[in-house]
Length: 124
Image (cartoon, rainbow, N blue to C red):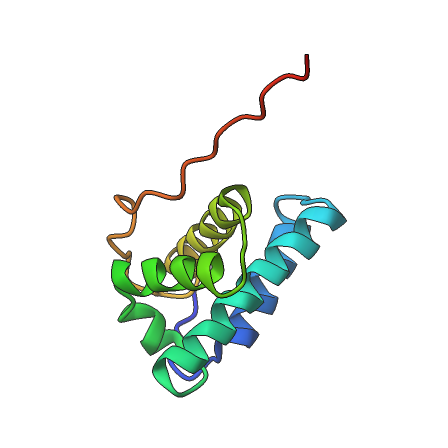
């Protein structure tokens, strides 16, 4: 495990995507989707905090930051519940990766509930 408090969010994102491809054998489609989800989140954090996120800013994340991101995606960008639920899953996976492999303290985000995904109704 390495701890690098000056590693940027986008550097950490690339490490996570490389790990997903190598260790978890994630599909190309998963890597594209999760990579985009995390880029959206990192862009939000840059606007929200006024600077590119680092390991220190990830350690200071609060559930309110994630709720603000999900709310912005819904209201400003018109993103649906299923996409926001996937984005939350990607962010949680990324933060778990940083905790396990790069010394980020575990965050109390497990209790944060994602958007409710309603299954599609069958056609008649």
